[in-house]
Length: 598
Image (cartoon, rainbow, N blue to C red; front, top):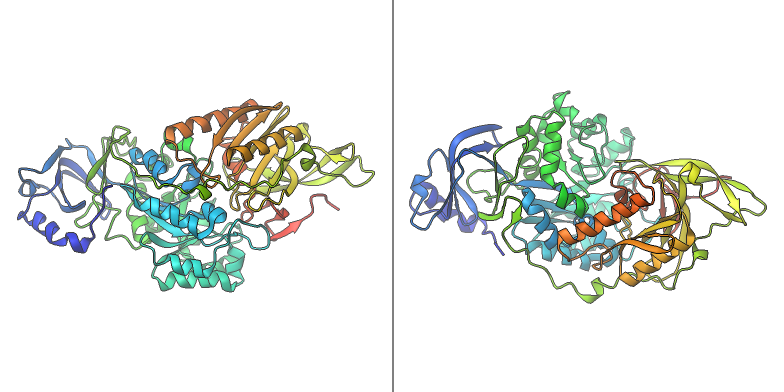
C-alpha cells in the first residue's frame, strides 16, 4: 500500500527539494503543466515529487534531481491533475472498494468521495465501517461520506438496519470520513425533522460537508427550505433551471453521467450558454456498474462527455478536480498540480480525446496505458457480511399473484413508468385484464409485473404491482438484491413461475442478479458481499454483467442500461411512483397508495 504523509510531516523535505537542498523521488520533465488554478497550459515545465507530494512545479527542476531520482521524460504531453468523483456509490459498481479502485485507476480516477448508503441499509454502521476501512487501504484517495438516510423514507420502507444521529456523530471521528452522505429525506429537512437536523448538526459541528439530494421539480419555497437546512450540494438536477437554482442558493450543482443517468448535457448550458461562474459546478458519476467501468471508463468518460457538450476542456477539467477538492475543503491537499498537494497526475497527449497514458497517484506510477501497476488490498470480509439474503421460505408462483376485485374482468391499475436514462419514474394508469380472478400484465401495453420480496428479516412477504417500459416479451423474469435503497429483492417478470424461480435462485446464491426465461437461467451475477458486491476481479464481474444485459435484451428489453432502471424501482425518494416492502408508494405525496384505482 502506498501511504501518504501529512503535509506537516512532509513540509521540511518538500521545502528542501524545492530549494535544491535535497533530491526529489520523482521528476516529470518537459511536459505541459495544466494549471487548474489559473486555467492555463504552461509548456515545457517540470514537476518534482517527494513523499508523495509535489515539491516544485516550474520551468526547470534540474536542481531537484539527485543520483537516485527517477526521471520520466514527458516529451510535451499534458500533465493534468488526477480526476475526482464528487459523488458516487461504490456498491453500484457491483464491486468492493478494492476491486472498484482496480477498475477505475487506469481511467485516471485518483480521488473518490463515496456514500456507502447501500451497505448501510443491509448491515448498518458496521457495514459502513467495513467499506471505510477497505477504502483506506487503497493506493488512491477514497473518502467516505457517512450515510444519512437508512431508511431513506421512514414509514415507507423497512431496512435491514437504521442509521441514527448517534451513528453519524460517531462516524465523524473516523479518519476517512469527509462528511454526511446525500440527505435523501428532503421532506424531512423541509419539515425540520429533528432526526435529520441532528445528523446535519453533527456533521457541521465536525466541520464537514453535508451532501444533498433534492429530487423534486419544485423550486419554490420547499427548495429554499431545503437549502436553508444545510445541504451543500445536489446531484438530482435534470435541467438547466435546476442547476441555476442550486448555485444561486449557494449549493454546488453536481452534474452526473452514470451508467444510466445523462444529466450533464441538459445542465451544463448554465455555464456554456448562460455564462454562469463555473466554480460552483462539479462533475460526478453517482452510479456506474462494472460494465461501464471496464468498457467505457469512469470520470474520464464524464470529462470527455462534458467537453463534447461544448464545455471548454480546461473548465470541464476544473469541474472534476479543483472544484471538487474545494467543495470538500481539500483545496490545499489535492485537486491540482501545485506545491504541497498530493502528487496525483495524469499524462495524456490530448486534452479533448483524453487518452489516459500514465496515472500517478501519491507520487507513484499506478497505471500505464490502461493497465494497473499496483496492488489494491482487500479486507477479509466476514461471513455475516456474506450471508444477508433471508427469504424465510421457498417462494411459489402463488406468491406473485395479484387478486382482482370479485367479479371484475378488468381493472384500472397504477403502473410504474420507467424513463430511459433518468432516475425519476412516471405514475401511469392502465386498463389491465383479469384472468381467473387474478390481474395480469399486458404485453401489448408493455406492462409486466414487479414484486418486492423482503430479504432482511425472513418474513416471506411479497408486495406486487406493475411496471411499464422494459419491453419484455415471452415468459421471463429478472431478479436483483440490488434494490435501492432498502435493498430487498426486486423481481420483474411476465410469468409468475419464472419470477419465483429467479427469486429462489438468488436466495441460493446469497444475492446478486439473475435472468430466467421459460424456467431456464440465462445469466447470473453473484454478489455475495451484502447481496450488493463481488470481491472478484472487475473484468470478471463486468463479463457476468454483460451476459446479464444480453439476457435482458434476449427477453425483449431495448432500454439503455435497463438494469440500472430495474435496481431503482424501489427508491422511494425519487418521484413519481415506486414499490417498497410496504406496498406501492406515491413519491409526489410521500404516502402509500392503492394499486387499483377506485
